[in-house]
Image (cartoon, rainbow, N blue to C red; front, side):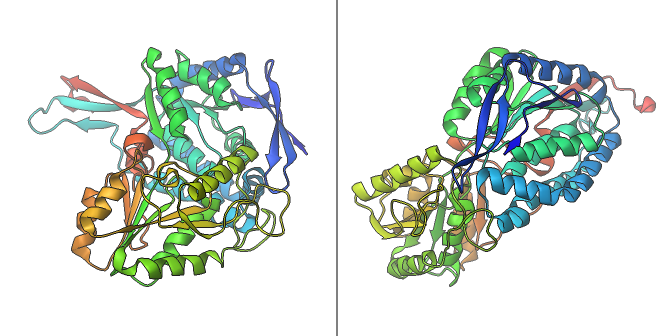
Length: 481
């Protein structure tokens, strides 16, 4: 068992103050695999104090200096890729091949994209030709609290830490207490890169403790949070008294609209995308809307694909899916699958209980419901497991109505060979992102949603500018630039 109880504060690993020990559970075995300490208010105060002291010089560094540190972090991140893959697989159950090929590389992808996007950031900008003596200064907001989830650990850590560094902010990172090991490796990477003391700090803890302390701290100017809508509401309320900027990236209940003229791989693509990472992705297409003329064929194809999805332990190589992250998550998913059955959805694959051959571990059967109506619980709530709901629709207007009938608005998907129809759908779907015909978003595209999915925009130029504030300056001396 790994015992790593220290926090990374002011450029060093330090012993926590009056902290509580917390076991990290291996979801494949249900056995403890590590012990961490949950930080106290004193630990949070120490980290924020270090970040506040460092902000005075870090915010004034040349942007190229900050970029140099980020490039060094990337270099060491690549060197530590196997350590990172092992940590992620152990802590949250991603199969080791998926951890290496997708989980770890999502961090590299974001670092690379931020390095490219940084070229487009103008920290001193002219207002316009109508006001030649006016400038807009884009300045770092200050000390930021970064609260990250367990499902894609390095995806979210790099989406927050890297742009904050480039913007000139100092920070305190609180990773999920369920999956903290990868963030500890990341802190070791930052330390090895020689980042100045106090710029990056890490305090392990839970939402009620360190999360609340950061959200209410008078010296924290911004909270960037990724997680559940419930927690996002709590953070927003907690942060209100100190007038913080709050950037939230929350849940989703994505609609995957498959028209009768969709390509032959559309259904298979949708099922596999839903089950990827054991369904633990906020942008998973968990509602498959199928046009009535091809509905029955789509259901049969989905059943066929589900039968090929294997489940296995995280340390086993292969293209299987692993367990879900925790006992609480397993129990929630089981309850929602049963709810689907009780409310009259037609179970066509999977169901309650563990897959055959498993009596331990948080393994969930890949599950598909057909004949789902959009008012059923499984169509309304974010399940966060390998559970797909298939819903019929009659025409384009009906598809838009069903897709938009949700509190969420993160990612929607459209499958059609009719370009004009795809474009109409993309404009009318209420979500921060729309992906069509299996084409992923390009490098630097902003990630974020609307409604209960939050309003953050992470990635690319948008992701860096979330950590900046605009200052209007008049009477600028152009000859002194």
